[in-house]
Length: 239
Image 1: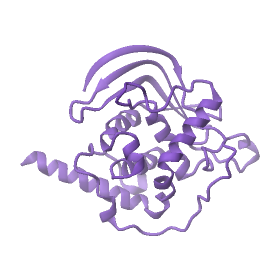
Image 2 (image 1 turned 45 degrees about the vertical axis):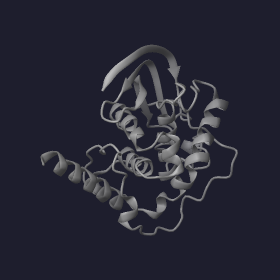
Image 3 (image 1 turned 90 degrees about the vertical axis):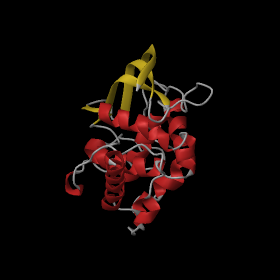
Image 4 (image 1 turned 30 degrees about the horizontal axis):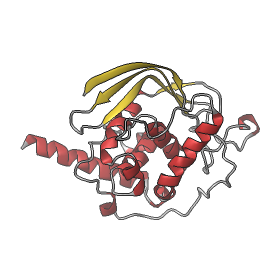
């Protein structure tokens, strides 16, 4: 990975806000998906190492969901430029640190940025100096208790749900990945709540089908699928 350009951004905050849309039904019946449908494309970057299923935290589960979506051939992955975008997702996950912020914020990125090129995939994207995941926001907190009133939905999805967390990560990824014309997939939203809402709605417009189908696959199935890919990659390198 090589650093291509350095710039200063006063603050680029990706806030997942309350939508006026009716919340989606996130309690759909659990079904089992054939693992063969989770096979990643050959040129998808390797997944990050993860613990056993019983030790996965909410961020790692959201990463699994996002990885599975991006590693396959669908409209969401295509929006990000294909599975190569996982390179930027991997960097984001490794950078995130827990913080206490305003309850409307799911994840916040701020500070100086660097544009990098992943030598393995050729993907160009930026990373922020600081990336925070809010312990008091919709990534972790539901809004069904008096103490959590005011915690917003994430677009169409209720806070503290599988769908909300995947949407939040994909929103952030949209601020990192560049289009072919040099612009980023999503404009900086900073403290502009309207732009942030529009950004979340844009992600749901292109990724909503895949996000709403997540309940059809268990985290255990996703973990097995990603672990098999790491095993295959390790075996290839040892040949």
